[in-house]
Image (spheres, rainbow, N blue to C red):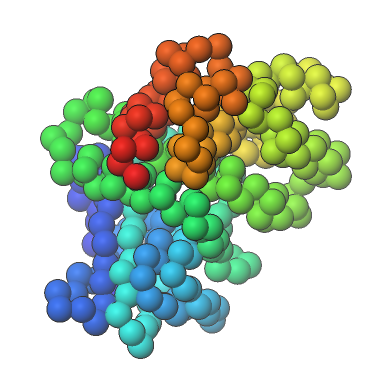
Length: 283
């Protein structure tokens, strides 16, 4: 199963589903110099890296950095979704490079990093994955590349937003006490106020710091801006309301403090590529 095959793609990314003990097995291939996200959709799998072993169950997501070799073993059939991408695909700018470097989920030197998706988060993951599968088969052009890049960035932000406490825990040893205090407060404020406040200025004021300082802290710890973190949290709230409530589009826009439905729809389309109605219909 281990391989040193280069990732051959005009985009610099790949996505697919690997299976085991099924009628038509599709094996998972490891490549040189790629970041990998694995999502176990069905079954149970043991992951072995060097002398470390971890058991994955349905809904678990595993993150692997460049050239981290591992072995998958299983005694029952499984279905494993995977996304792989290269540095050149993701790092268009220094900000992209910094953000990727700060995604410590990809560092398995101390332990195998994984998270478990909650039931309400599985739909989001499925949407992102299906979108990547469709783009993988489209003719390469700049628009498709940018769309693919934005979806993978959204996936990484989605992981942060859904598992912010875990992310902070991974970073704890790298943060000063002052940084840790500020970022925990920022996370708590987002959870408490995200339905009513989307402005960076509000969160900076609540933390008694300037917007510039909050940008500095956020970029240092997360490798991205507080505006993007807030936007990702808003998108997750919208999706939860679209899926789990009978509220109308207009009512959800009001609940999340948008000026009008058109602004609300424009925001959601920019973030996901779908209108709120299309997203709900697809569910």
